[in-house]
Image (tube, rainbow, N blue to C red):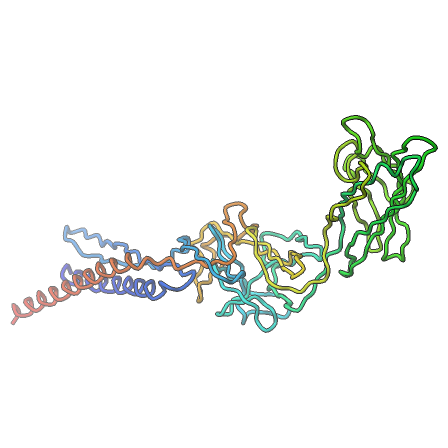
Length: 432
């Protein structure tokens, strides 16, 4: 029994070392595979208890696992949708073959991927993994989705021929009105300026702003009437205001008071006029009363700085960008940037309990525990990194060292089998 158990133990030693050799071969072969996680063979002894005082070799068994929690080094690339995670977490992907027209997809997990648009605009890797995310609302906000289900996720699809315009909703004026025009000897001529804005269709419109001085019977009035007309409404007046300026020492020239004659309200705390242009509401900043900036009245010059505004004309999609929070932005040649998807980060309690699949993908299993969808950088997850890939977690030098050890262990177990064979032969010779 003891001799035969030694033979069985030697055979078991050959088997487990062959398993370890297979993991080493896989690791070395995938040393250049982005996102690859090392396979590890762990040995466990087996004990056979004998009641008669003799000893029987129990042998050894091996369990093979994948060290999914080990991270590779991040390297820079030139593709904005090459994605990696600087820490814990996974990207949600679905196999291209698993796309379902009903909206139900099989969701897999990946730590990195080089995603590029296919013929239908879906962001997909060369191995057929389609990136998934939550679609943004038309205004760029991300709806609230449940975080414990994949139901809200959909394949990210980009229309490369899309156009976008950004309407102007804010405008800031910096204008100096000549104080001398409000003198009793002034001519009372109006001063006119125009300020461009963009409507809801990206069309260039403008506001015509007319400043008319109030001429007093004597002295200086320091008062103006400001009338605003909208070209998109055929030049209709959308606001009429009386402006009073301070002439006190140390505060001369600053806006003192604004009276609304018609049009939107004026907020003295923020210095903003609430206008309504053809496309909707617009805020116009003219300055906070009693403080420098915005509209002023000094000296005898009418001057203005360029109008500061948001919005833009119609632009073509030029590129995509992913920020650290996982928001996918469409970038247009007019300078506009618009969120179009939110890519969540998937996390599970036991990362090494995930089921390994082809192409460095993983799936949820009972051993991994339940998943949760985080915004990148929140909770235990790392930030999302664009223009980056995660290298293989294989350390070739360490694998080669284990290769030598495995070869020696395999040879030693083979020697045990050879020795047991010789001993059994000797036993047979005794019988003869």
